[in-house]
Length: 159
Image (tube, rainbow, N blue to C red; front, side):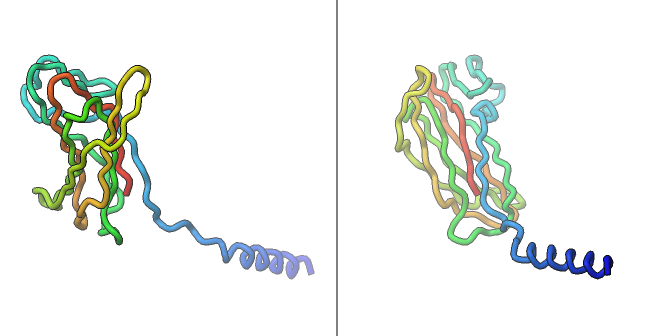
């Protein structure tokens, strides 16, 4: 009788949890410090500072690539990833770029800052980029051009 009760208890437990399903692979959002960006000019001009942000104090315009981890590797229904980039000036130009598996760009979108806010004595301008074209097994990166005296504070990509 004890064995029958134990089997019954296990069966009831299994049936009660049968309706609980594992969550589907949902999109996620990763936020990166602007200091993760890398100058595409070599040698890096004197006056470029990388810390928690990427700041160009040089007299030259600097082009940077900011890495993005892609963990949703198939084509998404309803469009590609969304991104925001917080910068110090609307003169900074940024795009979210998708690349092919074997290299080379596949698609990109550029945006202009749409939001301004003040944070700890810094002016912040936010780029908002949505639905970038994507390709199976491709990669992403942020591509920005920073005039002298500008910074990238942080950026985020949601898949």
